[in-house]
Length: 213
Image (cartoon, rainbow, N blue to C red; front, side):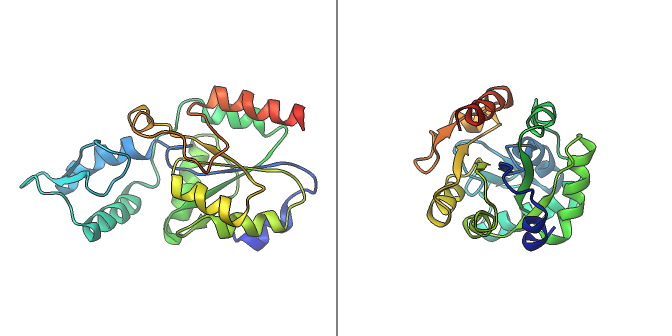
């Protein structure tokens, strides 16, 4: 769905929950870890990033940045349709949808968007999916400009929180890292208002925000 079409469909006055997909809704790293050996690589989780942590299984040499980019693109081509769900996400969104509009703002190639949409639907998550490239701040700012209610942004990547903070500072930002191994490697980003890593706690937090608004 395009941003203009999406914003024109938003009910006035209804809060919006704007969610990343990978490591918020979907277990991206876990699935990537299983995929890489099929193409001659392995993931070694030693830091909160992919660059420098993907190695050739042939010679144990770290993949070059351009190879990492190609490997991720290949992963989306092959696996965007069947990434497993983060525990509790579907049930939480079913509850939260009573009070929030919900949309997925995902950095995924345009031609893989439909596979991502179907993947989420297969998990019981049927909300608009907005395909983004690069920083999410400009897209978030566009949405905020055309929506007259509070917006909550949830993402695992610190640079995306920084981008949204710069472009749309009034959006409430929650740092969420689903994979417990990754979560242990990084503190709350300074550009998020809070850090929550499980859907049960996040649901309670978001419901409480509405009560206090």
